[in-house]
Image 1 (tube, helix red, strand yellow):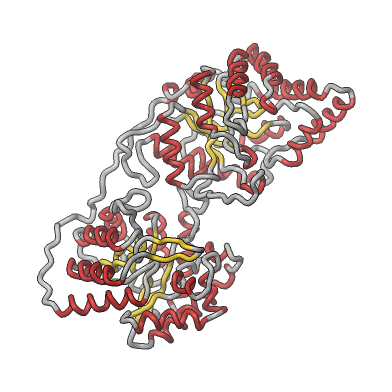
Image 2 (cartoon, rainbow, N blue to C red; image 1 turned 180 degrees about the vertical axis):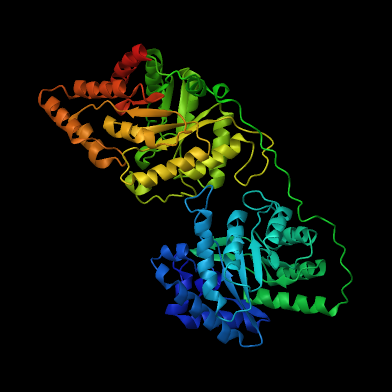
Length: 599
Protein backbone atom coordinates (compact mmCIF):
# COMPACT_ATOMS: atom_id res chain seq x y z
CA UNK A 1 0.00 0.00 0.00
CA UNK A 2 2.78 2.43 0.91
CA UNK A 3 4.63 1.84 -2.36
CA UNK A 4 1.41 2.08 -4.38
CA UNK A 5 0.44 5.37 -2.71
CA UNK A 6 3.93 6.76 -3.25
CA UNK A 7 3.59 6.00 -6.95
CA UNK A 8 0.36 8.03 -6.86
CA UNK A 9 2.12 11.08 -5.44
CA UNK A 10 1.99 10.57 -1.66
CA UNK A 11 5.45 11.24 -0.19
CA UNK A 12 7.03 8.69 2.14
CA UNK A 13 7.29 11.27 4.91
CA UNK A 14 3.54 11.84 4.89
CA UNK A 15 1.05 9.86 6.96
CA UNK A 16 -0.35 7.16 4.66
CA UNK A 17 -3.17 6.41 7.11
CA UNK A 18 -4.62 9.90 6.66
CA UNK A 19 -5.02 9.39 2.91
CA UNK A 20 -8.31 7.55 3.40
CA UNK A 21 -9.67 10.71 5.04
CA UNK A 22 -8.17 13.15 2.55
CA UNK A 23 -8.24 11.22 -0.75
CA UNK A 24 -10.25 8.02 -0.22
CA UNK A 25 -10.47 7.39 -3.96
CA UNK A 26 -6.73 6.61 -4.03
CA UNK A 27 -7.10 3.84 -1.45
CA UNK A 28 -10.04 2.33 -3.31
CA UNK A 29 -8.07 2.48 -6.57
CA UNK A 30 -5.17 0.56 -5.00
CA UNK A 31 -7.48 -2.11 -3.57
CA UNK A 32 -9.27 -2.62 -6.91
CA UNK A 33 -5.97 -2.97 -8.80
CA UNK A 34 -4.95 -5.96 -6.68
CA UNK A 35 -8.39 -7.58 -6.58
CA UNK A 36 -8.56 -7.39 -10.38
CA UNK A 37 -5.15 -9.10 -10.52
CA UNK A 38 -6.50 -12.13 -8.67
CA UNK A 39 -6.21 -11.32 -4.97
CA UNK A 40 -8.83 -13.04 -2.82
CA UNK A 41 -8.72 -10.33 -0.19
CA UNK A 42 -7.13 -7.03 0.82
CA UNK A 43 -5.51 -5.53 3.91
CA UNK A 44 -6.81 -2.26 5.27
CA UNK A 45 -4.60 0.82 5.02
CA UNK A 46 -3.98 0.84 8.77
CA UNK A 47 -0.39 -0.36 9.21
CA UNK A 48 0.45 2.77 11.23
CA UNK A 49 -2.96 3.24 12.85
CA UNK A 50 -1.89 3.29 16.47
CA UNK A 51 -1.56 6.07 19.02
CA UNK A 52 2.22 6.32 18.75
CA UNK A 53 2.58 6.52 14.97
CA UNK A 54 -0.35 8.88 14.54
CA UNK A 55 0.98 11.10 17.33
CA UNK A 56 4.05 11.81 15.20
CA UNK A 57 1.70 13.64 12.85
CA UNK A 58 -0.33 15.13 15.72
CA UNK A 59 -3.30 13.01 14.66
CA UNK A 60 -3.64 10.58 17.57
CA UNK A 61 -7.19 11.74 18.30
CA UNK A 62 -8.32 10.46 14.86
CA UNK A 63 -7.45 6.81 15.43
CA UNK A 64 -11.03 5.53 15.32
CA UNK A 65 -11.89 7.69 12.33
CA UNK A 66 -8.84 6.44 10.42
CA UNK A 67 -9.59 2.76 11.04
CA UNK A 68 -13.31 3.03 10.30
CA UNK A 69 -12.65 4.81 7.00
CA UNK A 70 -10.01 2.25 6.01
CA UNK A 71 -12.35 -0.69 6.65
CA UNK A 72 -15.23 0.96 4.80
CA UNK A 73 -13.10 1.57 1.69
CA UNK A 74 -11.66 -1.96 1.75
CA UNK A 75 -15.09 -3.53 2.22
CA UNK A 76 -16.59 -1.55 -0.63
CA UNK A 77 -13.75 -2.71 -2.89
CA UNK A 78 -13.83 -6.36 -1.76
CA UNK A 79 -17.59 -6.80 -1.66
CA UNK A 80 -19.00 -9.91 -0.04
CA UNK A 81 -17.02 -12.40 -2.13
CA UNK A 82 -13.54 -11.27 -1.02
CA UNK A 83 -12.19 -10.95 2.50
CA UNK A 84 -10.87 -7.91 4.37
CA UNK A 85 -8.04 -8.18 6.87
CA UNK A 86 -7.28 -5.45 9.41
CA UNK A 87 -3.57 -4.59 9.20
CA UNK A 88 -1.67 -3.62 12.35
CA UNK A 89 2.04 -2.76 12.40
CA UNK A 90 4.46 -2.09 15.26
CA UNK A 91 4.05 0.98 17.46
CA UNK A 92 7.09 2.62 15.87
CA UNK A 93 8.72 3.13 19.27
CA UNK A 94 11.09 0.90 21.22
CA UNK A 95 9.56 -0.91 24.20
CA UNK A 96 11.18 -2.05 27.40
CA UNK A 97 13.73 -3.32 28.33
CA UNK A 98 15.50 -1.15 25.74
CA UNK A 99 12.92 1.58 25.13
CA UNK A 100 10.93 4.13 27.07
CA UNK A 101 7.54 2.52 26.47
CA UNK A 102 6.50 -0.14 28.99
CA UNK A 103 5.15 -3.45 27.73
CA UNK A 104 1.71 -2.79 29.20
CA UNK A 105 1.64 0.62 27.47
CA UNK A 106 2.42 -0.98 24.11
CA UNK A 107 -0.20 -3.68 24.75
CA UNK A 108 -2.75 -0.97 25.55
CA UNK A 109 -2.02 0.73 22.22
CA UNK A 110 -2.59 -2.52 20.29
CA UNK A 111 -5.72 -3.22 22.34
CA UNK A 112 -7.02 0.25 21.52
CA UNK A 113 -6.65 -0.27 17.76
CA UNK A 114 -7.98 -3.84 17.82
CA UNK A 115 -11.07 -2.72 19.75
CA UNK A 116 -12.00 -0.45 16.84
CA UNK A 117 -11.54 -3.27 14.33
CA UNK A 118 -13.60 -5.69 16.41
CA UNK A 119 -16.95 -4.18 15.52
CA UNK A 120 -16.41 -3.42 11.84
CA UNK A 121 -17.10 -6.79 10.21
CA UNK A 122 -13.63 -7.72 8.97
CA UNK A 123 -12.58 -11.37 8.57
CA UNK A 124 -9.22 -11.32 10.42
CA UNK A 125 -6.48 -9.19 11.93
CA UNK A 126 -2.93 -9.33 10.60
CA UNK A 127 0.01 -8.23 12.75
CA UNK A 128 2.87 -7.54 10.38
CA UNK A 129 6.46 -6.38 9.96
CA UNK A 130 7.50 -6.97 13.57
CA UNK A 131 11.26 -7.15 14.05
CA UNK A 132 10.92 -7.41 17.85
CA UNK A 133 9.34 -10.65 18.99
CA UNK A 134 8.67 -9.13 22.42
CA UNK A 135 6.60 -6.37 20.84
CA UNK A 136 4.79 -8.89 18.65
CA UNK A 137 3.84 -10.87 21.76
CA UNK A 138 2.42 -7.72 23.36
CA UNK A 139 0.48 -7.03 20.14
CA UNK A 140 -1.01 -10.53 20.20
CA UNK A 141 -2.01 -10.14 23.83
CA UNK A 142 -3.49 -6.70 23.23
CA UNK A 143 -5.61 -7.97 20.32
CA UNK A 144 -6.74 -11.07 22.20
CA UNK A 145 -8.00 -8.96 25.10
CA UNK A 146 -10.69 -7.38 22.89
CA UNK A 147 -11.12 -9.56 19.80
CA UNK A 148 -11.76 -13.21 18.95
CA UNK A 149 -11.13 -12.65 15.23
CA UNK A 150 -8.67 -15.00 13.51
CA UNK A 151 -5.21 -13.60 14.21
CA UNK A 152 -2.24 -13.76 11.85
CA UNK A 153 1.14 -12.91 13.39
CA UNK A 154 3.97 -11.94 11.01
CA UNK A 155 7.58 -11.24 11.89
CA UNK A 156 10.52 -10.18 9.72
CA UNK A 157 13.85 -11.90 9.11
CA UNK A 158 17.24 -10.82 7.84
CA UNK A 159 19.08 -12.41 4.96
CA UNK A 160 20.54 -14.81 7.54
CA UNK A 161 17.07 -16.16 8.31
CA UNK A 162 16.78 -14.76 11.84
CA UNK A 163 15.02 -11.71 13.26
CA UNK A 164 16.84 -8.42 13.51
CA UNK A 165 17.71 -9.34 17.10
CA UNK A 166 18.81 -12.85 16.31
CA UNK A 167 15.77 -14.99 17.18
CA UNK A 168 15.39 -18.12 15.05
CA UNK A 169 12.04 -18.92 13.39
CA UNK A 170 11.47 -22.02 15.53
CA UNK A 171 11.84 -19.91 18.67
CA UNK A 172 9.34 -17.38 17.38
CA UNK A 173 6.93 -20.17 16.42
CA UNK A 174 7.02 -21.63 19.92
CA UNK A 175 6.31 -18.29 21.58
CA UNK A 176 3.49 -17.36 19.20
CA UNK A 177 1.86 -20.77 19.37
CA UNK A 178 1.77 -20.54 23.16
CA UNK A 179 -0.09 -17.22 22.81
CA UNK A 180 -2.84 -18.84 20.73
CA UNK A 181 -2.41 -17.19 17.32
CA UNK A 182 -4.22 -18.79 14.38
CA UNK A 183 -1.58 -18.29 11.65
CA UNK A 184 2.15 -17.61 11.86
CA UNK A 185 4.05 -15.99 9.04
CA UNK A 186 6.99 -14.00 7.73
CA UNK A 187 6.51 -10.75 5.84
CA UNK A 188 8.55 -7.87 4.44
CA UNK A 189 12.21 -8.89 4.99
CA UNK A 190 14.73 -8.83 2.17
CA UNK A 191 12.74 -10.67 -0.49
CA UNK A 192 11.20 -14.01 -1.49
CA UNK A 193 14.29 -16.16 -0.90
CA UNK A 194 14.77 -15.31 2.78
CA UNK A 195 11.03 -15.51 3.45
CA UNK A 196 10.74 -18.91 1.76
CA UNK A 197 13.58 -20.35 3.81
CA UNK A 198 12.16 -19.00 7.06
CA UNK A 199 8.66 -20.27 6.36
CA UNK A 200 9.98 -23.72 5.49
CA UNK A 201 11.51 -23.82 8.97
CA UNK A 202 8.16 -22.78 10.45
CA UNK A 203 6.37 -25.59 8.61
CA UNK A 204 8.51 -28.09 10.50
CA UNK A 205 7.61 -26.65 13.89
CA UNK A 206 3.99 -27.68 14.30
CA UNK A 207 0.55 -27.73 12.71
CA UNK A 208 -0.37 -24.04 12.51
CA UNK A 209 -1.00 -22.60 9.03
CA UNK A 210 1.93 -20.61 7.65
CA UNK A 211 1.80 -17.26 5.84
CA UNK A 212 4.39 -15.70 3.52
CA UNK A 213 4.32 -12.08 2.31
CA UNK A 214 7.79 -11.04 1.08
CA UNK A 215 8.96 -7.74 -0.34
CA UNK A 216 9.46 -7.59 -4.08
CA UNK A 217 13.23 -7.84 -3.55
CA UNK A 218 15.46 -5.14 -2.10
CA UNK A 219 14.51 -1.48 -2.61
CA UNK A 220 16.57 0.82 -4.80
CA UNK A 221 16.45 4.60 -5.05
CA UNK A 222 16.88 6.68 -8.18
CA UNK A 223 16.15 10.40 -8.54
CA UNK A 224 14.18 10.36 -5.30
CA UNK A 225 11.95 7.42 -6.34
CA UNK A 226 11.97 4.03 -4.67
CA UNK A 227 11.60 0.92 -6.81
CA UNK A 228 12.13 -2.83 -6.44
CA UNK A 229 14.23 -4.94 -8.75
CA UNK A 230 12.21 -8.14 -8.75
CA UNK A 231 10.22 -9.42 -11.72
CA UNK A 232 6.77 -10.96 -11.33
CA UNK A 233 7.83 -14.29 -12.84
CA UNK A 234 10.32 -14.79 -10.02
CA UNK A 235 7.53 -14.04 -7.54
CA UNK A 236 5.39 -16.67 -9.22
CA UNK A 237 8.14 -19.28 -8.88
CA UNK A 238 8.48 -18.35 -5.21
CA UNK A 239 4.71 -18.76 -4.73
CA UNK A 240 4.73 -22.21 -6.33
CA UNK A 241 7.57 -23.42 -4.11
CA UNK A 242 5.92 -22.01 -0.98
CA UNK A 243 2.57 -23.63 -1.68
CA UNK A 244 4.10 -26.95 -2.71
CA UNK A 245 6.03 -27.00 0.57
CA UNK A 246 2.76 -26.69 2.48
CA UNK A 247 2.24 -22.96 2.86
CA UNK A 248 -1.31 -21.71 3.34
CA UNK A 249 -1.58 -17.92 3.09
CA UNK A 250 0.24 -16.09 0.32
CA UNK A 251 0.73 -12.40 -0.37
CA UNK A 252 3.23 -9.62 -0.88
CA UNK A 253 4.64 -6.65 0.99
CA UNK A 254 6.71 -3.60 -0.04
CA UNK A 255 7.03 -3.12 -3.79
CA UNK A 256 4.55 -5.88 -4.68
CA UNK A 257 2.58 -4.69 -7.71
CA UNK A 258 -0.64 -6.10 -9.20
CA UNK A 259 1.57 -7.94 -11.70
CA UNK A 260 3.31 -9.74 -8.84
CA UNK A 261 -0.07 -10.73 -7.42
CA UNK A 262 -1.24 -11.91 -10.83
CA UNK A 263 1.83 -14.17 -11.08
CA UNK A 264 1.18 -15.57 -7.60
CA UNK A 265 -2.48 -16.20 -8.42
CA UNK A 266 -1.47 -18.21 -11.49
CA UNK A 267 0.94 -20.25 -9.39
CA UNK A 268 -1.72 -20.87 -6.75
CA UNK A 269 -4.17 -22.17 -9.38
CA UNK A 270 -1.50 -24.44 -10.83
CA UNK A 271 -0.59 -25.92 -7.48
CA UNK A 272 -4.25 -26.29 -6.53
CA UNK A 273 -4.87 -28.31 -9.67
CA UNK A 274 -2.23 -30.82 -8.66
CA UNK A 275 -2.89 -33.69 -6.30
CA UNK A 276 -1.27 -32.77 -3.02
CA UNK A 277 0.47 -35.62 -1.34
CA UNK A 278 0.89 -35.90 2.38
CA UNK A 279 3.54 -33.52 3.63
CA UNK A 280 6.11 -35.03 5.91
CA UNK A 281 7.04 -32.72 8.71
CA UNK A 282 9.85 -33.10 11.12
CA UNK A 283 8.57 -33.56 14.65
CA UNK A 284 9.92 -30.43 16.23
CA UNK A 285 8.46 -29.76 19.64
CA UNK A 286 6.89 -26.36 20.13
CA UNK A 287 9.13 -25.91 23.11
CA UNK A 288 12.23 -26.14 20.98
CA UNK A 289 13.67 -22.89 22.17
CA UNK A 290 17.38 -22.79 22.62
CA UNK A 291 18.19 -22.91 26.28
CA UNK A 292 20.13 -19.90 27.43
CA UNK A 293 22.55 -20.14 30.30
CA UNK A 294 23.67 -16.58 30.91
CA UNK A 295 27.25 -16.32 32.08
CA UNK A 296 27.96 -14.36 35.20
CA UNK A 297 30.29 -11.37 34.78
CA UNK A 298 33.46 -11.09 36.79
CA UNK A 299 33.24 -9.67 40.32
CA UNK A 300 33.20 -5.87 40.18
CA UNK A 301 36.66 -5.53 41.70
CA UNK A 302 38.15 -7.62 38.87
CA UNK A 303 36.61 -5.66 36.00
CA UNK A 304 38.54 -2.40 36.25
CA UNK A 305 40.33 0.02 38.55
CA UNK A 306 37.05 1.88 38.98
CA UNK A 307 35.30 -1.35 39.92
CA UNK A 308 37.99 -2.15 42.49
CA UNK A 309 37.84 1.31 44.07
CA UNK A 310 34.05 1.14 44.25
CA UNK A 311 34.08 -2.35 45.72
CA UNK A 312 36.66 -1.40 48.34
CA UNK A 313 35.09 1.96 49.19
CA UNK A 314 38.22 3.91 48.26
CA UNK A 315 36.58 7.08 46.89
CA UNK A 316 37.35 6.96 43.15
CA UNK A 317 37.90 10.37 41.57
CA UNK A 318 37.34 10.96 37.87
CA UNK A 319 38.13 14.12 35.93
CA UNK A 320 36.16 15.01 32.83
CA UNK A 321 37.99 16.06 29.67
CA UNK A 322 36.23 16.85 26.41
CA UNK A 323 37.56 15.16 23.24
CA UNK A 324 38.99 17.67 20.75
CA UNK A 325 37.27 18.87 17.60
CA UNK A 326 40.29 17.87 15.51
CA UNK A 327 42.22 14.59 15.10
CA UNK A 328 45.14 16.08 17.09
CA UNK A 329 45.01 14.44 20.54
CA UNK A 330 48.46 15.51 21.80
CA UNK A 331 47.12 18.23 24.11
CA UNK A 332 44.39 15.92 25.46
CA UNK A 333 46.94 13.26 26.36
CA UNK A 334 49.21 15.87 27.94
CA UNK A 335 46.42 17.14 30.21
CA UNK A 336 45.41 13.55 31.07
CA UNK A 337 48.98 12.85 32.14
CA UNK A 338 49.01 15.97 34.33
CA UNK A 339 45.78 14.88 36.03
CA UNK A 340 47.14 11.35 36.51
CA UNK A 341 50.17 12.76 38.31
CA UNK A 342 47.90 14.95 40.46
CA UNK A 343 46.00 11.91 41.73
CA UNK A 344 43.10 11.32 39.37
CA UNK A 345 41.99 7.70 39.13
CA UNK A 346 40.18 8.05 35.81
CA UNK A 347 39.65 10.37 32.88
CA UNK A 348 35.98 10.82 32.03
CA UNK A 349 35.19 11.43 28.31
CA UNK A 350 31.78 12.72 27.15
CA UNK A 351 30.20 11.47 23.92
CA UNK A 352 29.47 14.40 21.60
CA UNK A 353 28.69 16.81 24.46
CA UNK A 354 26.05 19.41 23.69
CA UNK A 355 25.45 17.51 20.43
CA UNK A 356 28.74 18.75 18.95
CA UNK A 357 31.01 16.91 16.53
CA UNK A 358 34.28 15.80 18.11
CA UNK A 359 36.75 12.96 17.84
CA UNK A 360 35.27 9.64 18.98
CA UNK A 361 35.51 9.45 22.75
CA UNK A 362 36.20 5.69 22.54
CA UNK A 363 39.20 6.35 20.30
CA UNK A 364 40.34 9.16 22.62
CA UNK A 365 39.95 6.83 25.62
CA UNK A 366 42.03 4.13 23.96
CA UNK A 367 44.80 6.63 23.20
CA UNK A 368 44.76 8.05 26.73
CA UNK A 369 44.96 4.62 28.32
CA UNK A 370 47.77 3.62 25.99
CA UNK A 371 49.83 6.82 26.09
CA UNK A 372 48.97 8.47 29.41
CA UNK A 373 48.62 5.28 31.42
CA UNK A 374 45.40 6.19 33.19
CA UNK A 375 42.08 4.36 33.07
CA UNK A 376 39.12 6.03 31.38
CA UNK A 377 35.37 6.25 31.87
CA UNK A 378 33.63 6.50 28.49
CA UNK A 379 30.22 8.13 28.10
CA UNK A 380 28.04 6.14 25.72
CA UNK A 381 25.20 8.13 24.14
CA UNK A 382 21.95 6.81 22.64
CA UNK A 383 21.55 9.66 20.16
CA UNK A 384 23.79 8.59 17.29
CA UNK A 385 23.50 4.82 16.98
CA UNK A 386 20.77 2.32 16.33
CA UNK A 387 20.49 -0.86 18.40
CA UNK A 388 22.87 -2.89 16.27
CA UNK A 389 25.39 -0.05 16.10
CA UNK A 390 25.33 0.24 19.88
CA UNK A 391 26.10 -3.43 20.35
CA UNK A 392 28.86 -3.29 17.75
CA UNK A 393 30.51 -0.22 19.29
CA UNK A 394 30.28 -1.60 22.82
CA UNK A 395 31.91 -4.89 21.80
CA UNK A 396 34.51 -2.96 19.81
CA UNK A 397 35.32 -0.77 22.81
CA UNK A 398 35.68 -3.82 24.98
CA UNK A 399 38.02 -5.40 22.43
CA UNK A 400 40.15 -2.22 22.65
CA UNK A 401 40.45 -2.66 26.41
CA UNK A 402 37.85 -0.12 27.56
CA UNK A 403 36.13 -1.37 30.69
CA UNK A 404 34.13 1.54 32.14
CA UNK A 405 30.97 2.99 30.61
CA UNK A 406 28.63 5.79 31.67
CA UNK A 407 25.26 5.40 29.96
CA UNK A 408 23.44 8.58 28.90
CA UNK A 409 20.49 9.31 26.62
CA UNK A 410 22.22 12.33 25.04
CA UNK A 411 21.32 15.84 23.94
CA UNK A 412 19.11 16.13 20.82
CA UNK A 413 21.00 17.48 17.76
CA UNK A 414 19.10 20.77 17.65
CA UNK A 415 20.94 21.79 20.81
CA UNK A 416 24.30 21.46 19.08
CA UNK A 417 26.24 23.02 16.24
CA UNK A 418 24.59 20.88 13.54
CA UNK A 419 20.85 21.45 14.15
CA UNK A 420 19.76 19.81 10.89
CA UNK A 421 21.37 16.48 11.78
CA UNK A 422 18.88 13.77 12.71
CA UNK A 423 19.01 11.62 15.84
CA UNK A 424 18.41 7.91 16.25
CA UNK A 425 17.32 7.36 19.85
CA UNK A 426 16.34 3.71 19.25
CA UNK A 427 16.62 3.37 23.01
CA UNK A 428 17.17 5.66 25.97
CA UNK A 429 19.63 5.27 28.83
CA UNK A 430 17.48 2.64 30.57
CA UNK A 431 17.42 0.48 27.46
CA UNK A 432 21.16 0.89 27.02
CA UNK A 433 21.73 -0.23 30.61
CA UNK A 434 19.82 -3.40 29.76
CA UNK A 435 21.95 -3.91 26.64
CA UNK A 436 25.12 -3.71 28.75
CA UNK A 437 23.65 -6.10 31.28
CA UNK A 438 22.94 -8.53 28.42
CA UNK A 439 26.50 -8.24 27.09
CA UNK A 440 27.93 -8.80 30.55
CA UNK A 441 25.92 -12.03 30.73
CA UNK A 442 27.02 -13.17 27.27
CA UNK A 443 23.81 -12.29 25.43
CA UNK A 444 23.15 -9.96 22.51
CA UNK A 445 20.25 -7.49 22.26
CA UNK A 446 17.96 -10.31 21.18
CA UNK A 447 18.88 -12.50 24.15
CA UNK A 448 20.99 -14.85 22.01
CA UNK A 449 24.20 -16.47 23.18
CA UNK A 450 27.25 -14.44 22.08
CA UNK A 451 29.63 -17.35 22.73
CA UNK A 452 31.54 -14.86 24.85
CA UNK A 453 30.87 -11.93 27.13
CA UNK A 454 31.98 -8.51 28.28
CA UNK A 455 32.88 -7.44 31.82
CA UNK A 456 31.98 -3.76 31.85
CA UNK A 457 31.76 -1.65 34.97
CA UNK A 458 28.88 0.58 33.93
CA UNK A 459 26.83 3.33 35.46
CA UNK A 460 24.19 5.90 34.68
CA UNK A 461 23.34 9.52 35.38
CA UNK A 462 21.29 10.79 38.30
CA UNK A 463 19.90 14.32 38.38
CA UNK A 464 18.89 15.20 41.96
CA UNK A 465 17.71 18.66 40.85
CA UNK A 466 15.35 17.39 38.15
CA UNK A 467 12.19 19.47 37.78
CA UNK A 468 10.10 16.28 37.84
CA UNK A 469 11.86 14.44 40.65
CA UNK A 470 9.24 11.69 40.82
CA UNK A 471 9.87 10.78 37.17
CA UNK A 472 13.65 11.01 37.64
CA UNK A 473 13.46 8.71 40.66
CA UNK A 474 11.28 6.23 38.78
CA UNK A 475 13.73 6.15 35.87
CA UNK A 476 16.65 5.76 38.26
CA UNK A 477 14.97 2.75 39.87
CA UNK A 478 14.75 1.15 36.41
CA UNK A 479 18.47 1.76 35.91
CA UNK A 480 19.19 0.10 39.24
CA UNK A 481 17.15 -2.93 38.14
CA UNK A 482 19.25 -3.04 34.97
CA UNK A 483 22.31 -3.68 37.13
CA UNK A 484 24.24 -0.40 37.10
CA UNK A 485 27.39 -0.46 39.23
CA UNK A 486 27.45 3.27 40.04
CA UNK A 487 25.63 6.53 39.39
CA UNK A 488 27.07 9.97 38.66
CA UNK A 489 25.18 13.15 39.43
CA UNK A 490 25.06 16.36 37.45
CA UNK A 491 27.42 19.07 38.79
CA UNK A 492 26.28 19.79 42.34
CA UNK A 493 26.03 23.42 43.45
CA UNK A 494 23.04 22.86 45.72
CA UNK A 495 24.57 20.53 48.31
CA UNK A 496 21.57 20.59 50.63
CA UNK A 497 19.32 19.61 47.74
CA UNK A 498 21.38 16.50 47.03
CA UNK A 499 21.58 15.51 50.69
CA UNK A 500 17.78 15.76 50.90
CA UNK A 501 17.40 13.44 47.89
CA UNK A 502 19.86 10.71 48.90
CA UNK A 503 17.53 9.05 51.49
CA UNK A 504 14.85 8.73 48.81
CA UNK A 505 17.05 6.58 46.55
CA UNK A 506 16.62 2.77 46.52
CA UNK A 507 18.39 1.31 49.58
CA UNK A 508 19.94 -1.41 47.41
CA UNK A 509 21.21 1.12 44.87
CA UNK A 510 24.82 1.43 43.72
CA UNK A 511 27.48 3.89 44.96
CA UNK A 512 26.96 7.55 44.04
CA UNK A 513 29.70 9.74 42.56
CA UNK A 514 28.96 13.43 42.97
CA UNK A 515 29.68 15.79 40.10
CA UNK A 516 31.73 18.83 41.12
CA UNK A 517 32.40 21.72 38.73
CA UNK A 518 34.92 24.44 39.68
CA UNK A 519 33.39 27.59 38.22
CA UNK A 520 35.95 29.61 36.26
CA UNK A 521 34.08 32.90 35.87
CA UNK A 522 30.77 34.62 36.35
CA UNK A 523 30.02 34.01 32.70
CA UNK A 524 30.70 30.29 33.19
CA UNK A 525 28.33 30.24 36.18
CA UNK A 526 25.57 32.05 34.30
CA UNK A 527 25.95 29.76 31.29
CA UNK A 528 25.59 26.64 33.45
CA UNK A 529 22.62 28.14 35.25
CA UNK A 530 20.77 29.19 32.11
CA UNK A 531 21.76 26.99 29.19
CA UNK A 532 22.83 23.54 30.41
CA UNK A 533 19.85 21.22 30.95
CA UNK A 534 19.76 19.50 34.32
CA UNK A 535 22.22 21.80 36.08
CA UNK A 536 20.90 23.95 38.93
CA UNK A 537 23.02 26.84 40.18
CA UNK A 538 21.37 28.45 43.24
CA UNK A 539 21.03 32.21 43.45
CA UNK A 540 23.39 32.24 46.45
CA UNK A 541 26.18 30.77 44.33
CA UNK A 542 25.55 33.25 41.51
CA UNK A 543 25.61 36.08 44.05
CA UNK A 544 29.03 34.92 45.33
CA UNK A 545 30.38 34.69 41.79
CA UNK A 546 29.14 38.21 40.97
CA UNK A 547 30.89 39.60 44.03
CA UNK A 548 34.08 37.72 43.20
CA UNK A 549 33.90 38.90 39.60
CA UNK A 550 33.87 42.51 40.73
CA UNK A 551 37.04 41.93 42.74
CA UNK A 552 38.75 39.98 39.95
CA UNK A 553 38.81 36.69 41.90
CA UNK A 554 36.01 34.69 40.24
CA UNK A 555 38.24 31.66 39.46
CA UNK A 556 39.46 31.44 43.07
CA UNK A 557 35.88 31.73 44.34
CA UNK A 558 34.77 28.95 41.97
CA UNK A 559 37.41 26.62 43.41
CA UNK A 560 36.39 27.59 46.95
CA UNK A 561 32.74 26.74 46.21
CA UNK A 562 33.80 23.39 44.76
CA UNK A 563 35.95 22.58 47.82
CA UNK A 564 33.03 23.40 50.10
CA UNK A 565 30.84 20.99 48.14
CA UNK A 566 33.46 18.23 48.43
CA UNK A 567 33.80 18.75 52.19
CA UNK A 568 30.03 18.67 52.67
CA UNK A 569 29.50 15.57 50.51
CA UNK A 570 32.52 13.35 51.15
CA UNK A 571 30.85 11.51 54.04
CA UNK A 572 27.69 10.89 52.00
CA UNK A 573 28.89 9.80 48.55
CA UNK A 574 31.27 7.12 47.30
CA UNK A 575 33.42 9.33 45.08
CA UNK A 576 33.57 12.35 42.82
CA UNK A 577 33.55 13.34 39.19
CA UNK A 578 35.45 16.60 38.74
CA UNK A 579 35.28 18.89 35.75
CA UNK A 580 38.27 20.52 34.08
CA UNK A 581 36.52 23.45 32.38
CA UNK A 582 37.82 24.10 28.85
CA UNK A 583 40.26 21.17 29.35
CA UNK A 584 42.48 23.37 31.52
CA UNK A 585 43.85 21.23 34.35
CA UNK A 586 44.65 23.88 36.99
CA UNK A 587 41.30 23.97 38.80
CA UNK A 588 40.93 20.16 38.72
CA UNK A 589 44.49 19.78 40.05
CA UNK A 590 43.66 22.06 42.99
CA UNK A 591 40.64 19.91 43.82
CA UNK A 592 42.61 16.69 43.43
CA UNK A 593 45.29 17.93 45.82
CA UNK A 594 42.62 18.76 48.37
CA UNK A 595 40.92 15.40 47.88
CA UNK A 596 44.18 13.49 48.22
CA UNK A 597 44.37 14.55 51.84
CA UNK A 598 40.68 13.84 52.47
CA UNK A 599 40.35 10.37 50.96
